[in-house]
Image (cartoon, rainbow, N blue to C red):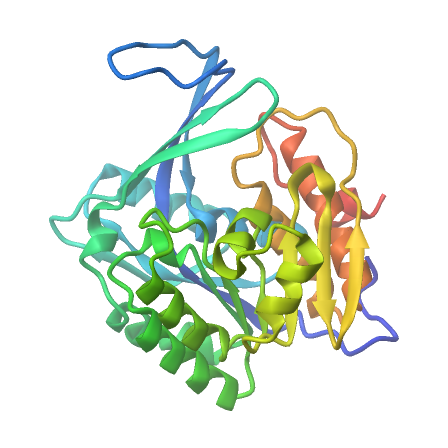
Length: 319
């Protein structure tokens, strides 16, 4: 990926600010099936890692060479200390990362099948108690950024979608690009939630759901149609992640498809977040959507093919 492009100026000197969920993942790989109640199944490997959509995206962007700031919160426990230390060790700005005294850091248990597919069980812990004031107090990270991402909002139950929309509106008026990836709604996408989400989407520059999320919001499982319905809600660009089927972008009425890069899959936990990072890395350098999709696909492909040292550099992705 070149440092500059004929498609626009390079903006990577400005940081990308990531707002959202940070947690610990206990990942058990090689799980053949989920157990019935009262039963047990065995995996063949486990990993305890700093995670959450915000954390994975931050690690991936830093590995690609982008300045990153995070806004969010962790508990006042050993896992909160681990997350903060892991972010700092990668050169990520944690000035907006708050510690909730006496709170527990969020935890997700991820069961990963041999083919890489996964399922999650989470305790959001301190994220149930924290609200938009965390974002307000960390606003210096927003001020320094050209792009601001709100990630894993349904894994941060204390946030209000409507009040988050007001913050997105404030960011756009300040000239920021706003990026949204909600993650899956464990509450089941209730009508009131969808109404509030539409308010937030009206203030969103780029919306980046996966197909399951896009279908839950729009009622359409056909990727291009789901993207069209989402675009009508306000985002300038809709990017739908399709897993092994690749990805799709819709902007200015044009649909672009990108095939997935074939690899031997180890683990897909965090794959969508790493795709987002690759896409945004290319966009920060002025690349058009088709090249952003390709770079995102290549970044995610390398990530899911590795069990350790998973986040690739820009040079690795570009080769």
